[in-house]
Length: 492
Image (cartoon, rainbow, N blue to C red; front, side, top):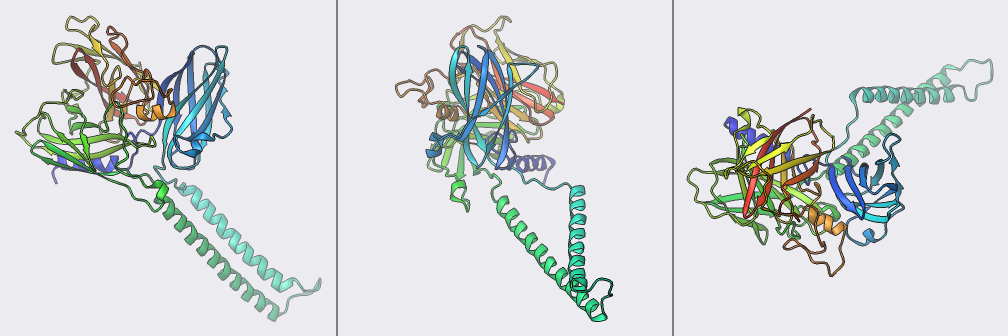
């Protein structure tokens, strides 16, 4: 296998165990509940059942009380919420709240926020995917200590049994006879055998439980890519689990921003070419005639949303041969290119092919597991703010945050990292509300939509889950042109 092939294979191995976004389990969302503006960070547990920690930064009208409630996103249980938990305001900053809730089962959940303040009471919900993505292991030093304590208890118990048989009926001041000592040794040996069998049975039971739990670890739908000419055929297979509740079909997808699938194709290992594409479904297949693409190996990240609001990112790869025929891109398709990551870090100003410029105003420092708002601006050829802005699939922009070793991929919108289709399920609008995005109903004006053609900036809430180097792909639209800006970030 070539070095390039090994790199791609390693990337696919690393991404195959992640969920929703690849390697990015936390949810970052900025939302508005009436006059209250909330920047919400939900840190999901690695195991289920588990505790999700919640942080809220509020702006807008002052908040006097903030309560959170976890409940399933859909189904009968979503109609019967448990008692809410009250978040605690910070003593140093009354606009910052923290709290925690138990997530008791895998699946598509929501955390409902009940906001109270001088401007009245409001409710808003944030969808979260709840899956077990790891098995907690015991620290080796702690395991040794517990094993020694267990051995001590077993030996001590055997000593107690031996003493009881030897001396329980012995008169005070008398010494046990040889026969009593013999019986006590036999009793001690028998007790050791019984306790060894109990320990063995307990270990066997534990191993069975651990093996059963390992089957609950999240595994994405299997996706196979076949490229014939420039015709891409993605076959998505359902996930069948022993527990029917955990089984997931491959035919219940709902539109998100007007498309059943959002497909990012990123050339490896340089990450110097990116395509945001939208295949059409035919049964269990997603089909697409590819546009002109430079040859090479591409990682494919396909975002889909199930009918219950559960999002998944499906991962596979293709090899684009030299001279591949090309088809015209779709109206919502986008492409971009930059220098390979090995040539050095890109700056904060990206020159676009039509002489427009996209600018990133980065934070002073970037650290892992920290919530940020990433601010991007689009400038015209003369350097002034672009004045012909248009919504791109109903939003002011789209962004993909991708770690250069392929362990992280996150498709983020101006309202946050949750899928918009799931957000709409969590916050249904009145039945007569008309959607602003094709193929989506139930929301009258989605967050992030460009309402002002002179609004040339877009913000994305997100936090890098791991330290390392990332490449950020940002799409914004002016007139009929979808621009793709590319930026690099080093996270401490």
